[in-house]
Length: 442
Ligand SMILES: NC(=O)c1ccc[n+]([C@@H]2O[C@H](COP(=O)([O-])OP(=O)(O)OC[C@H]3O[C@@H](n4cnc5c(N)ncnc54)[C@H](O)[C@@H]3O)[C@@H](O)[C@H]2O)c1
Image (cartoon, rainbow, N blue to C red; front, side, top):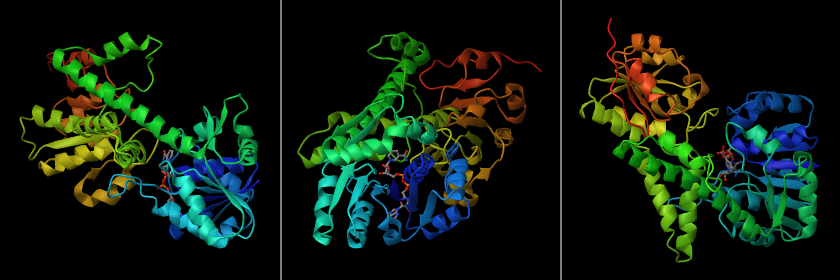
């Protein structure tokens, strides 16, 4: 099939690349000229495991092309995906300016029938409004379909190639049938292709993200309760997870959720509820709990140092909002860094891939370290904000030598408190009792 993907970010580039890899003829469109120029030269603008090789191979084979010209990009295409950003607007709702601009530009440019597929996360009613807006501009027949994306950054290729399910929202069965053909190569293991109305499809994405965010805020609140009463959330997790109604997945406490999706999608759901006079009590609570939780590491650091961080140096491991991505949008690490800097501390940071994005914001306010151990040199404590695999099994002896004092604030519960105490660390996890460190002589 001939496909255009408008918006070449985390979702658009992965979508375009994976569709090209399955044999389609794909052109990716973006308004940022430097991004498109880079892609034409083989420079991949984001870090996503496995993406680079796929982009390069498909571009070389001529199945994947790039342009800044939307009219050129969509001219030949039967299917046009919209994958532009829908960030949080000033009123808390999704900012749809990108979607409207692309819809209008498509309507102005089309010369033959097209299926326009909204992959961006958009509030209920957007597909209908987009179709209405486009019909004001063009007489050429077109369809608008919803196809929310469920991929996870850090595992985006795997998720796109083997989705748990594909959801499409269509007005005509023929459009659903065409999209089923497009996705058939990705659903060979009989995972479902679910056809529904555009309204239900749009809502499905919000319900999924709101529930996932709820699980995180729930377990974080329970973790804080555990900590206050001397219980260990890790043991409690095991205690509840075997109940099949509960399960184990996505119930890991931490320093709050971040990223480009959960925070804004929860707030967009709240905004949608407000639009119909509904209260959204749970989503407000989920958001409030998360905002408070993002301060958990900063609070623990402040308490440990008696509220005085002036002149202290803190190492921070992990800057991306989660492992295996360079995405730092709404990352809890940045909340911690802001707090440390505001309190007069020096901050030494390490992350396997996100340093360039962090440097673009903080410039020379931070010390950037290529290696995790480098960040520890002369630091009064280490705080871990993201659970990259390389932080899971460090050499603790080397760490004690490099740190000025062996103190760890572990926002992802990577280590065992008893073992850390035995090694002489003062170890603060999330939702776990903090055993006093054993005396280490010498
Ligand atoms: N990132 C994720 O993990 C994820 C997962 C599922 C769904 N989504 C949703 O997918 C959408 C895209 O998210 P993303 O993370 O890929 O965003 P992103 O910011 O990484 O990429 C968006 C791209 O769209 C381009 N763009 C914006 N306006 C444009 C226009 N008028 N014409 C051409 N290009 C334009 C931008 O330059 C950018 O390259 C959002 O609605 C998001 O909520 C994201």
